[in-house]
Picture 1 (cartoon, helix red, strand yellow):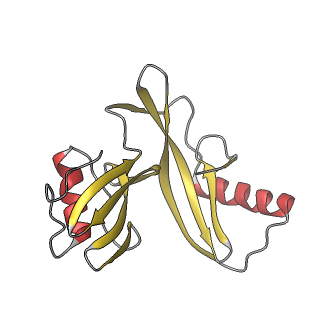
Picture 2: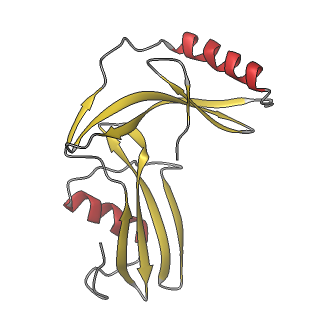
Length: 161
């Protein structure tokens, strides 16, 4: 979306402006620490918000807001589709099973880390040509060497871009 300069003023809080813009579009964004990337100085910069379904983050649905001269000028990224269903084709793996699968993946691939810092259930959105989408549960395992994503249905490692 390309907006006219001055149509949406940045105000004193660029992140709040971005959240309100998404809310008017009927899109929910994550709240809390780490849910937004804010790089705004001198009336310009960017805010990146991660969309959600209910209270769960959709890790491949991020919207970037670009501000220039005190106004929102560009909104870009991937939003959740209007017609999205949960993938219930298989039973979800429990966390101990996911953790054991993660240890197998780390062992087989030679990844080295010293600390598992956090584990969180998220979704990945996949879209079909018809315009419908599916949310698949994915565990994000945060280590001191980076994040790993494990499919919550298959136990396979996922690549998230």
